[in-house]
Image: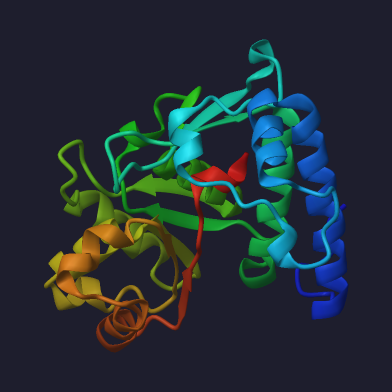
Length: 253
């Protein structure tokens, strides 16, 4: 059972983090030859006094090597990064326990704001994104992860990544007076909300809880910050709950 993510003060969390990150490092050192070699070159002392003692791993390592601390037959899921900064995505291998622990952790954190009651979820993506259940992209992992808070899932984009207006209106007409989640990668949400011009649709998002993350690099050329993004949704759609989660597929391993 997980404690509330906000139940400890900074000092308590710091002690727990250093204790558990050391435990994790030593485990992977004993199971992964590549990581063990890296630590030896890093001159890691097997002690964590400050954050500076943690042997940080270059993201490129997950692109160039198969970093495995389990036998290949124990791989439960493989997750790939979005690869927005290169053509070579990171590859993260999960076993069943790792995958289950992350679901429990996400639920512990997310339920703090969303509560324990499942609510409808409008997904700004198309259903093909989750078709392959063995090899996950970052978008797939995000959708399936946050779906634990949903009572129903509605994909609002078609196969060409255009809005299915009929599906959108059906969802909004059904849930506009109830709390519901709108989930998606940031650049897809920006494109989605920016393309809606019908005021009758705009006015039906006031009870939405926006959850978005990833995809910021695709908005760089527009010079849109997180502050700008939130202000736009608040001013135009009167949305009060907006959560920008930070996630790197590399850390899920």
